[in-house]
Each structure stands twice: as C-alpha cells, then as structure tokens.
Length: 77
Image 1: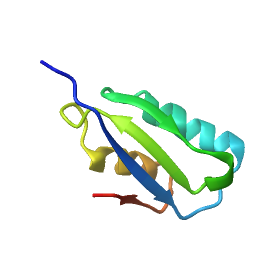
Image 2: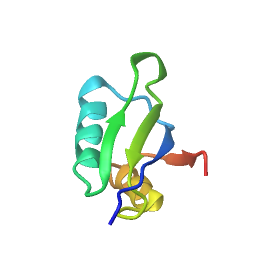
Image 3: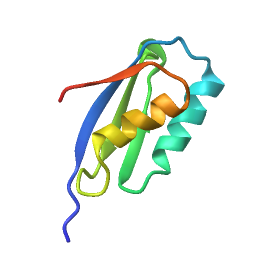
C-alpha cells in the first residue's frame, strides 16, 4: 500500500502558551498516519499537520484538538 500525503491547517481560537502548544503537537504527532505537526511563533493560532488521509481522517485531527478543550476548525477542506 502506498502512503499518501495531505496537509491540513487547523485554526485554534484560543491563545496558547509554549507548553500547551508543544503538548498538542506531541499528541497529534503520535496519531498513526501523521507525519509532522508544526506551529510557528508568529502564527501560534495556526497548526499545519501533514498526514496520510488513508490512515487518519482530518476530522480525527480536529477531534484531538477538541479533546484538549480547544475551539478549532479545519481550514483548506
């Protein structure tokens, strides 16, 4: 089976400190099929996730954010 790569941008409504962002990045990166998770210092409300849509659905990525008590939405669907 060939791996495919897609990326999704997640907008986070809350302002997060470094520790919270790193916790969320770590949790999402541990999902099977996720290749990388990135948040930049000057756009802390946006998280870019590269993943294999054959292994994980974008909704699952969003649900993980909501499990952290965040209000977030997918951008780029």
